[in-house]
Length: 314
Ligand code: CP
Ligand code: NVA
Image (cartoon, rainbow, N blue to C red):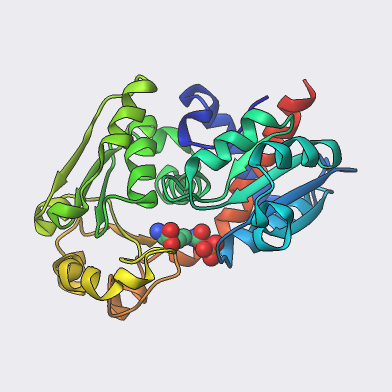
């Protein structure tokens, strides 16, 4: 059973076709030729808030002919102590796929290991692979100009600023290595990449080709994309004040953005806190592609679900 728990759950050789499928689904939206999830129900277990992920998956499952079933983790027995393993076994008897947003990455791994249906990671504390694939697709749309979408990523540089120890940074480290991109991260020394992501790179046979610096200017120099995320992620709200204090030097101001390449794009997974990790004028800059990025969640996740469903049938 193929799952999508981490960026490397698709091989680099499968990605050109996946990106082309997402592009085709985007062009043909509303005229879907093959309702590949017809007759299927896909459950979505969410333990955290969501706007983009929830809506894009619900709409995407519907557009592929399936039925989305949203389950707030606290409303099902999993929230009151039924085991992850039994939840996986039970849901596998009812539904055809599972989309999960939770805290511990091990939880999505256990759901995948004990069920018999494809599981998609819709964000854990460790990784956010649906976002990274979408982001890469969004960049490729700009760079490929009708040519090889996936190939247009190779050699490009992304500068990632702020909290370099959590899901978005980890996913960029892993995704960047898979896509052949250079990843320069900048943040306070105590918020640098941890040993888990290096261990995963090694496990997946990927090079440790990212750089971490405490100098935001160094990271953005020659960057094709400047990327940031909130400084206090979901579950870290109590640390927000201290995080703002130490991360302020990494805010994407108009001046810092101007130090990247003249045609560099600004990206953010959203939701954003304007005036904290990014200035409002950067969010509003014509080279800010944050809403294309949000829209593309739909097209890329439809491509991912269609591929997993097809592979599950094979
Ligand atoms: N970027 C993202 O995953 O947004 P949501 O938290 O709104 O789903
Ligand atoms: N790092 C953020 C990403 C939100 C999409 C969080 O985990 O809250």
